Image (tube, rainbow over all chains, first blue to last red; front, side, top):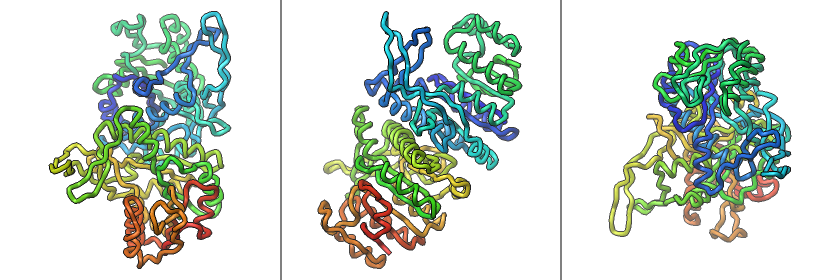
Length: 266
Length: 266
């Protein structure tokens, strides 16, 4: 069983990805987890409620999700992007079924409504944040679909233990899925050729990273890449055997990573 | 197996519906089909692309769905409304799974891209209409979920034979579901107490309609109510034994219709 995680950037090419998934499903069971932050930000802007990022007193930035932001999140992720991905896969003969973490309590977690944010010299407490961390997976529903030759296409939000819809981090949800579903292979596609030694220099690709050396590579990593590295670290702790990182913008994105043209972590 | 069809009006109370569904699922297998036209129209207005209705040369009006309108449709139906319904059901202990007609080719149909519209004295041909009629149901996926105690919560759009996402009519899709799933009981909840003798006079409720008399009642019916009556007629032709119409705005909407407080067609 291979889990393919796809970033939410606007340059991700779903037609190309769908073509490769169609080949892959002939040999392997596949689960897809995707983002949609690019489209989400566009819709939020159009609706005059642009995505807001807050910074914690310790310097960690995160998206602030009030009810309006969550509504836009639902529209972009579970509505627009998820269904277009499903249609692209169907067009290539892949019997995809799109689900959010809310459906069947697929991704269940703990809401973290209180959030300390730093605004200049002041620390402010936000109490209406609709975010949380996935703690539990509905493996029954995922296995039921996979056993019957459907390809689950999963996106946030998740559902809280108290049945609130909550924004959540895909990297962490994927790590829990790896553990609870016993996934050994993780492919992660995004808007870069892989792990870069110099951020923004696409020629500085690092082809192989040994899992025991992940910590060393954290020095090259900035922002999202750092989060991805930490995600990979947890994925290994949770039982994954190999992680492929590669470019979600190019023709044959999956064939390319499997042929070693991105970054392999093992 | 009971199919519950819920209108897309803004006054529909999903908390009340979810409470009743929680009781019903203890005795019966349930499938839910819902609309979201109220929210869709609001989002469309906010995005400065208000829903456009066109009229055919013979006087039938329909929603014109170009790519922008379809994107908004996906956001409102499959994103915002579908997931909030699923969360409301989950809150009441119902293991709901939200799906659009695109997922697993649940609702597959024929795209009707060409549409003649009347504009004053002129007849115009529209060729980019993303609508169609459902012809085929993925009964395997629905039965798989139901057999495993999930409650499918289904909304449009559908998918065309050529894998385009298409807007479609819920009444007609429900009629096909009745046929292919062998459904005998249909509950339809909307923003009125049932079939009214005088439109807009909620005291003029008609409590019982004999199925053979549906044609006679078409004289009372206007617009949407007419479409509902025609939908009921096809439902009977397709094997349904009893149809309950009732108010989706009130406490205990399902208990009420089953107790004969709406309109019963049999």
